[in-house]
Length: 244
Image (tube, rainbow, N blue to C red; front, side, top):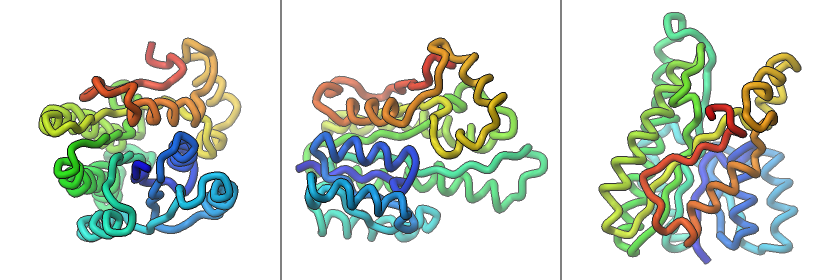
């Protein structure tokens, strides 16, 4: 059974990705600061059908110095790490001119520095194991821009550049590195938008609908599978045609 580490997997998109991967036959090591009620409920539902395939390991991704030991502990507990899905991220909406420096630093730390360092230690094991898969969750905002999300967009753009260069760096070791760029996903966050905002997003999309969690999860599952063995260094956009 291949082990896949999924960050930010206690709720929302990360939990949806984790559930999809468990059903596809992977053991998912779900990472978040703490277990949510949503995660506990999902784990209870999954355990009877897929015993031992959905486990939780706590880690505050802002605490960069704890990442090396975390990866070491995961390998000791579960064996080689086949896949890493860097999904965790935070977003603070607000103009750059008025954003506190502490908020900017936290966004960069959690969204950019943390996945880079996590990948550094995970990829070392993959290189010695003879292969692996890394999937970074970016965003269409990395290329389209969005007023009030300049720092967030910057961190997601950085992940795209990181993906392309790392793919060249580790390809000879049998490691594929790709990104998935979701559009506005139908999650609890976007359900907080008012009807006018949601309608505007839907009207802008070629398919006239919101992207669903399963759509993004399917793309991640594909990139981890043998069907994507010759796909690396690229970005798959899943946005119902918002950027078409």
